[in-house]
Image: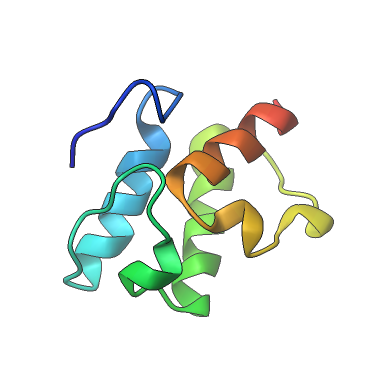
Length: 85
């Protein structure tokens, strides 16, 4: 999974979290803008990803920000984190 700097920001932590969730399920890596739902992540996987983001970035996600749109891709998650930090 290569990061294209023109499509993804951050220090790679989000991409690493996503890659770990995908790997646990035996799913292929995704690009920064690829749909995580289309990649095979379930609602439970998304919750685990949300918890991982909170832990990795030492933030508490506001309930109104825990939306499918905010967790649709690596880029969407990075944008969410940028807004909250």
